[in-house]
Length: 395
Image (cartoon, rainbow, N blue to C red; front, side):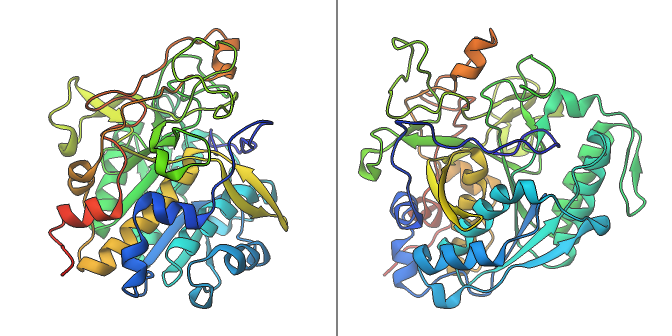
């Protein structure tokens, strides 16, 4: 997890939390085994990541040696600094998670980290994010994963936005339209984590009101919410929305072995961005998040040389980036947001509350159920379902 444009510490698995999964578990959960068996490991695909910290080659090598589906295919990550960014070593855990899981699931893909600084205000970061997205498109990235964000209402109040490359916009609405335009012009599929503070995208860094998280609230970006296993550690048990709480044992979704008290999956409506085409059937005038959901933890990573367990929708975004890179390799087509909606399997249980919100007196939360909801969107996407929607069936 990485929320606010400023770095925050990652939510690490609390005592008694569920067993941490590895890439081999995600292969089963996302149905990637058939693609791998057919020799598809992401060869010819290029995936970009927007990061606050420079990649650690030693952490990545150690993780891939233990957990990659084809460690012989993994290559060192290329790092591109935006506006001469120096990077923040304290944010390395986020970079480790993004690159290690995408690289373990799609080891043949080329991975590029676009390094941005977290200095300055929201408008300053929004400008750097635009330049990172634009550069990723120019570099030929077919897919981009973003696990950084801030509250949608906080972004809406940022004022004029100027990026280091010289472009400027009078307000965040103009900026959002331009960012979507840059994504469309590059024909990229962009994923962004939907947040780790339930319905309160500004908590605890800013506004204590329900709101989505940007840039997942961008119309041209696929916002990815979080799921957890219905039975801790058992992939075959199915999934539910990432959340729950231990302070209220009779509350919906409570499971003491499956609860991370301080975080849960984000979601909710934008306060200023209109509904994108893929959401034309949803109620309300504004963009809803998340679009889809994927596993948010706990997951094992290697950080500063040690194995640790982490949670966050910033795990869900790179997992979906890897799934779609493999599907693009198989079909020769880049999945679209419409494909993802059509392939989504409805998640019917769980909620996105957590103890930190309850202690702060923030009691709203979303409950997963039939149809679109504000914690898992249209549902979870597996490779077989996505390939079916893209009209590929194995013979």
